[in-house]
Length: 252
Image (tube, rainbow, N blue to C red; front, side):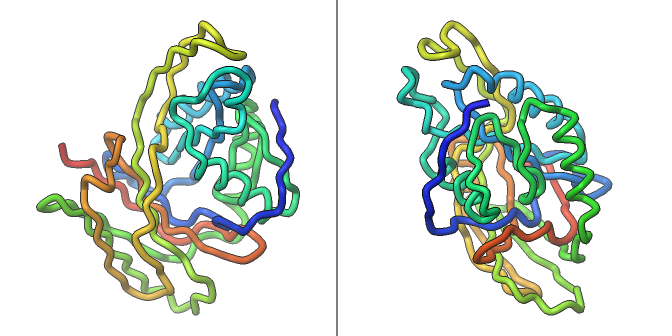
C-alpha cells in the first residue's frame, strides 16, 4: 500500500448518491457503489484491480476504477489518470478528516475507505455502510433518443431535503488493457474494469421531481458506457446513498 499526505483543500464532493451503471436492468437497487483509486505506477495495485473486476461482475455492485496521477514521478505516466480523480480522492479524505490517501484505496458507498486488495475488508465495508441508515425513496429513470440522454428524478419522499446534490454523468470504459513499460510494474500487462474516463456535472438537485439532459456523446465521452451519480454535497462529511437505482442497457 502506498500512502500520500493530503494538504487541506476545498471539498470537491462529500459522498456518492444514486448510481446507475448502464447495463441490463437490475431487479434490485445496487447494494454498493465501489470507487477504486489505483495507479499503473503502484506495485500494490494489480491485486486490487483484480478484486474490482471480480466484484464488477456482481449484478448488485456498481464498481468504478479511478486512475490517479500522483505516482507518475516514479518513472511511468499513468495512461488513464486524470488530476480530477486525484482531487476527488483527496476530497474524500478531507471530508473524513483523516487525510488518508493511498493506492490502492477503495471508497465504499461514498463513506468508508479500505485497502482495495483486501476482499474481506471491502465486503465488511459494504455490509457496514449498507446498514447505516438506509436509502431515501428517490427514483431515477434514464432514456436515450436522438443523441440525447434524459435523466428524470422521480422523488416522492415526504422527507425534507436539506442538502444540495448534483447530477454527474461519468463516461466509463468497461475494459482497458495496458502494457506498462516502466516503473514498479514494468513489463506487466494489466486489464482494468469499468475505467472512469471523465466526469460531467449536468445540474443540481434540491429535492422533488427534476429533469436533466446531456448529449449522448458527452455521456459516453472516451468510454463505451456511462454511469449517472446523484451525489450529495456537504461541507465536512460524506452523506449516505439516496434512493433506488435503475439501470438500463445502453443503446449501440
